[in-house]
Picture 1 (cartoon, helix red, strand yellow):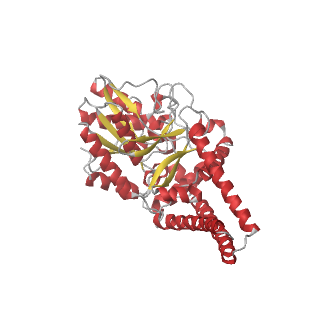
Picture 2: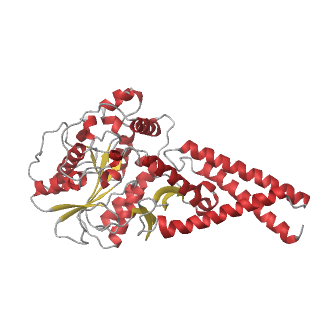
Picture 3: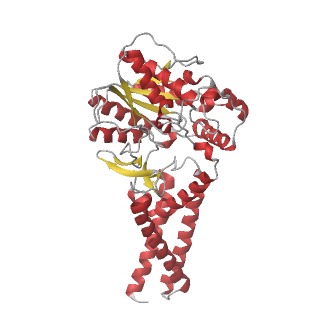
Length: 453
C-alpha cells in the first residue's frame, strides 16, 4: 500500500472519528435536544449513525493494520463519497430553489442574516410584505397613526379567518376606540418563532427604518420555553425552520444536522400534512365567526399534541430554557428602550390549563401537575427584569370555544376575546376613557400580573 493510499485511508478514518465525536458531544452538551416532537426518534437515528461510523471505522482500521486494500473498505469509501456528493447537491438545490426567497418550492421559510443577531428564519416574501408577514397591504416605514409592533409566533401571526379576526389587530382596534385616535398594528408574528427570533425580528425592522410607538411581545407558554433552547439556533433547510446546534462544527459533522437529513425530515412532514383534511388549516375570508362552538370530540392530533406538551412542560423531570427566555426578554426590553417606546409582555397560557372540556376528554386534572409552573416562571422573569406584563388567562376562561377544534390555536372568538382584553389593558397604559366591550363574553378581562401597573 503506497503512502498516498495510507494517507487517504487515514483521512477517512479520522473523518469518521470526528463524526462520532460530534454525535457524542452534541448528546452531552445539548441536554434539552434539538426537537420537541420526535426527540426519541432523532436520538435513535443519531445512535445508528454513530454505530455505522464505528463499524466503518473498524473496517478502515483493520485495512490500515494489514496494509492490504479491502474490497469492503473500498465500497464503504465509495458510499461515503456518494453521501458527500448528495449533501453538496442538496445544499446547492436548497439555496437556489427550496429556501430561495423567490421559490414556491419547499416550505414557506427563508433565512436572512440580521446584523447583531445572526440567522433569522422568516416567511418568504409576499406581494404585501418583504418579510412574509401576514399584512393586508404594504406597511409604510413610518405612519402618523399610533402604531403598536406585535412580536411572537403563530398566535401573533394569526389563526383567525381574516386579519380582522386576529388578536393583534383586534387589540389595536380596541385601543383606537378607547383612545379616540388612530391606532394600528404592525403584525410581525412568525410561526415557530420564540423570544430569540422575536429579538432578531425587532432588530431587522429597526435596521430597515420601521418606526413604532409601542412594542408587545406575546410569550406563548405552551412552547416558548421549549422552542428556544441553549446552545441552539434556528436555520432554514428545504424552506422549513429547524433548530441546529450553534457550534458550526457540530452542524457540519453530525449526520443528523446535514442538509440531506433535514430535507428528509421535510419530506416526511410534508407527506403527513398532505394526509390531513384540507379544512384543518384552511383560512376562509369573511366575517369573524363569534358563535361559541363546543368541543364535541378530541381529534387524535389534538390529543397527542396536548399530552405531549403537557409532558414536556409539566413532567417532574422536564427541563425548560428559563435562562435563555429571560435573557431574550431582557434584550428585547433593552432594545425597545433604546427606541424610547414602551415594551409590554403579554402571556398566553397552555390550552389545557384553561380548557376544562379538553381536560375532561383527556382525563386530566389540574391537581395532577403544577399548573402555575410556566406562568410563575414568566411572572418571575417580568418582575426581576422590570418588564410590564399582562396575563391573559382570564380572557380564555370560557375554555374550548376559544380554540380551534383540531389544535391549540385560537378560534375567531378566542382571538377577539384576547384582542379586546389586551387592547383594554394597553389602553389603560396609554390613558383612555372607561373601557367597553363590543359583545358579551365570559371572563374577557386581562388578569394583571405582579408587574402590571
